[in-house]
Image (cartoon, rainbow, N blue to C red; front, side, top):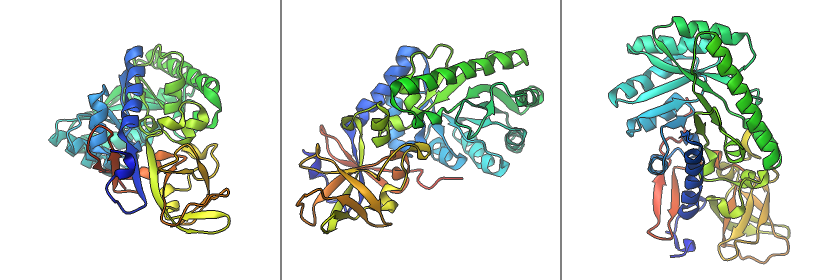
Length: 374
């Protein structure tokens, strides 16, 4: 069966090519296996229980989620080890997840980068009548969340962790998201090397503060794919690697043939300059790339019959996309594949994923944690 023979779904919809998806999943698993470290993938990319199960079949140990409500979906689905990689400062958002974890005999770990964050987790732990593992977030250059490895604030957090009976220190986490603003594997590799240096420094400082043997967990697909060594690292947390997108191609860590996710849209009108498709910002998003980095346009479009010819999506309305014609003569009604700049926010705009499997029947996977943003 050719992927153009998928069920006649109304456009726009998300199409996942399972063959490419599996190849990407195995690539991430092979990196972790070769380095002898844990793979804890980030489910914010796909928000799908079925896809998370596929990752576990291929060696993932535990999951990473963004928000407590997102994590709760996976805990209730039976996943036993979830890291919430977001600095939650409201204990009321944590308590329902801890209760779900108790009911499902799961372990849930939180992160913090402030006294307020640790206090929130501590209050939630006390309300739930249990102890909770916590990791400290280190800022390795993105300057979004986390504290600097050299910061005196690390001492204060260490003191809180040492004296709290409700918090269990579980190591360090980082996200080198600024790698998305680099060009080429060499530059990304430099970001990965600096991330590793700073994390080892933070661990050394914590050892001196009475918190020895801190596990180190690093994230971001570009740095995972470009790092020369994981010496001293215990865990990696890539997310986008399962689908990849035009940002990954721009960075040089993937080719167009690696991208596993596209939006299928229909040409509903045409003029001298553009094909107008029924996928606008409510389907493709207006994201230029992770952390708003580096991209141009809003995707590349091709037909099912000619996937090598790619036309840029140059403008978006809410429900319309403007695809450059470049002298083409495609008729109204033609379906197009649009590869997005950034796959992760695209998934969150849809309730399901249409999955094409060249060795089996097509299927629909639910985006189970869609909209879970608290």
